[in-house]
Every structure is written in C-alpha cells, then in structure tokens.
Amino acid sequence: MLIPVTDAPEFDEEASKVFAEGWPEFIFHDALAKQYAERRDRFFAGVELLLHVS
Image 1 (cartoon, helix red, strand yellow):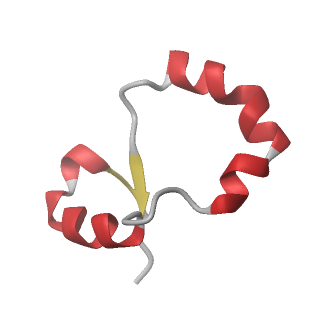
Image 2: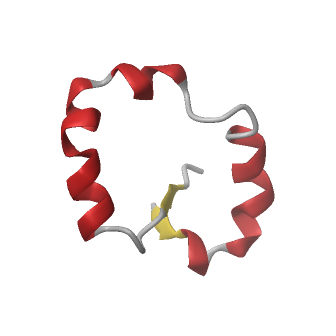
C-alpha cells in the first residue's frame, strides 16, 4: 500500500530506523534515477510516499 508520508505519522519512527544510515547505496548508481532526478523534483516536490507491506 502506498501512503503519503503526511497521512501516516504513525510510521515516522519505523521509517527513521530504515533510513537511519541514509539512502541505500544502489540508489546512487541507478542511471535512470539520475536521469530523472530533476524531473522528479520539479513535478513531485511535495510528494513523499511510504510503501507499507504487511
């Protein structure tokens, strides 16, 4: 389930633990992520989602 971060403060603590050391290393080596980073920031600056798997 995709959940906007602002709609799910109950997951803040869990998300903080997951990203305590920063982004996973593979993110920095993904050619498509780099290619679309500017577009993502421009069009989706206010969107931050969590993927919750139960």
